[in-house]
Length: 231
Image (cartoon, rainbow, N blue to C red):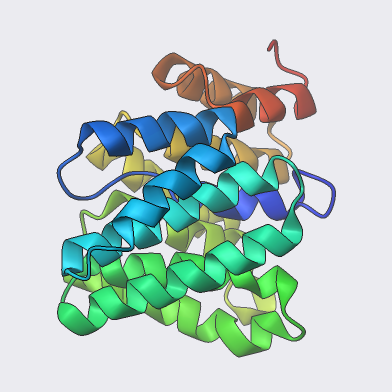
């Protein structure tokens, strides 16, 4: 992942949409993610952790994933690792409560992927399980937009000799957009895939599509700057 310094920020973009019913506090946390306001997200996490139900654990895991994005923005790598670890634990508790939850498995896979850059031998330790969890999420719900995005990121950053494929990444991201045209995250990832494929025109077009959906997301503005678009 190559977008910011060592490129770790890109990973978190697979953590996007709340798969259950939205509520005002989650919308506030989403806006905090877009602004890079980690403290506001931590406050929401403190409330969510008190709920031991399935919904509470899913909510907690999702908020931790959003906290990762906010912390990437200030290059707090230690904080990202801690948030990802805590998020995995919450998602695993959710999966124990509802083993057939696509979103629980998706979050486990995504958050394990977040941990890979921060752990010695992280790819060997967590890569295969991360992929299995995302595949399980898609098996349980083929319409899970965020699972398609997560699978795309895995295809993008896995070496070809181990099954990586930019073309398959594009397929999953286009499927995500087909399912949810309002997913700015899918467009942001598709822009990065096209950038990796040396197609700057398509990459900038995807960034513009993301801007139309969510013009305030901080990472969008960062990518526009990196790719030579108009901020």
